[in-house]
Image (cartoon, rainbow, N blue to C red):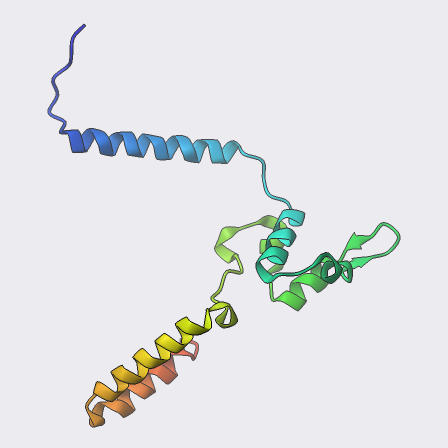
Length: 139
């Protein structure tokens, strides 16, 4: 049997192949073993640079049971995420301390330059908007 002629362009076929690969990858991920609380504790410990000694204070009793509640409270982690691994409530957030100092400096210099270019009558409204960005939305 020879080649088959279709109305599909090469781009269409490439898009279909890419979509199929994505579905295959997702299906394999569904069958993969689930992460455990211990894996999520290790993830948080790695991200925050905690040592084994730091984690030791959360181990209690004869069986060395891990105190998940105290760990979550101290590190500001949602217990539901810790127990279920629901990614919608993953504790990812931008840590200002984690930003390299040269990036902070460059951002501050750019902010100062942009503020200096503003017409003086617009500065109060821009500052008001910036102050409002840090406040939770009312509603």
